[in-house]
Image 1 (cartoon, one colour):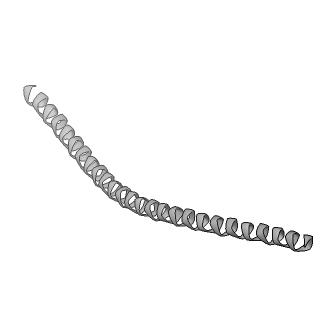
Image 2: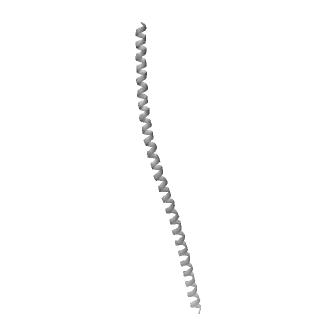
Image 3: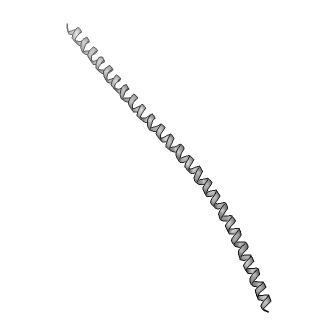
Length: 93
């Protein structure tokens, strides 16, 4: 009878381990699912940020082109003013 009790204790211990293993697997599945959802959300945010970055880069390039065009116009205006001042000085003499 002692063998049977010892065998039952071992069996009960194995059943307990099995239940804990099943509970651990379920917990890990839930954690994996949660992490995958977080990953998907992070990927969507990253894609949105990438799009925003591309838009901002495009706007920056356009502003730099506009700045260069304005700089050239101002230089031309300054050259024109200089020429007019030279002409005005020569007329006064």
